[in-house]
Image 1 (spheres, rainbow, N blue to C red):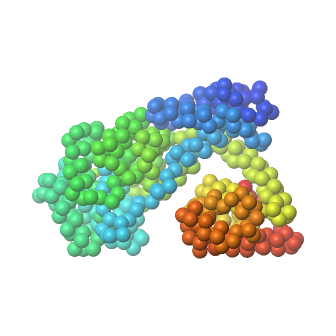
Image 2: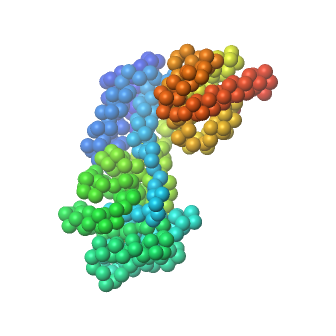
Length: 437
Ligand code: GDP
Ligand code: MG
């Protein structure tokens, strides 16, 4: 197994504190194979490995990890970061209707996914409309009409109109009259990327002026995923990706390839033929799957937990000595944001819990808090008492926030410290079992 090989490579290294170049390279050879086996495009693999190599060499090895695990951890984190996108939701226009154009090769799942999306929007209480703009075959129109009936969503279609541009113009008019929103346009595909298809899609795009162009891709697409995604992105310009057929055996290497060449987030995944088989994209899960090393990763997780406990002890000591500063707060927020959905981990935070609830569970707020802290001087972070009115104005300016924002953060920080003090004096101050930092 891969783990054994890696362990063998690193055996002689154990106990040394830093990852060395030749050892990282040896480990990355194995990672390279794992990625290729997952059908990540070879060029993408090469670039990825090189980046990881540069990151890994010289890195300190966590006490609780073996060097091999440390390399895998870095690879895993890099994968998650690469796969993750900050703007992964489908954005709706403030001026309805939002126009969503679905593009992709034949058989990738455009028609099915269009209907799945319509169903999701309908469930949110919106009034979606589907448009059958794949006029290549009558069967394509029928397919969408049937799906529309199933979910009770209107499907704009015509068996007479032969020009998709004309059809789309009519569809937009109808959408405005019906106050439909969003409008999801299913377009034609081909077995292979060709000029004619791209021209048709460009024409349709020009008529629609879509807010979102979603590239639908089959997760089973192998090495070709890069070229296909590249063509669509260069010729049409995509805003996001939906990866279908993730319920199959594919390890999902296409996700990495597509993300790497387009830089566009994977917004959703298709997980079956049924109309409700659509899911959020979780970078960590897919990274796991691409690496195909579930056992190793759970090992790392265990080790990480042990390490986290140590860090938690350090934090506890700081709180007890009343040395908790803005720098510590920033550090905690950093660590938390790395952990994924903030809602899930809020409950694990002692003391800070209330503080975090106050600043709303919103990624944007966290960015703001970090910006404010970054604009403080070293001295201010350590000793917030010195932050007077003129300093507050400076901090607000420097962080692109308002004095109100700064005031609120400082107030909350003081409240949090007060709470920490109470906790300290009460006998109830214990760190929870699963402590994220
Ligand atoms: P299009 O040519 O791009 O419009 O693709 P279709 O929507 O017609 O889908 C092609 C085939 O893939 C159909 O048989 C779908 O049922 C199937 N399909 C689409 N999405 C998924 C998915 O997420 N999982 C599975 N297992 N099958 C899917
Ligand atoms: Mg279709």
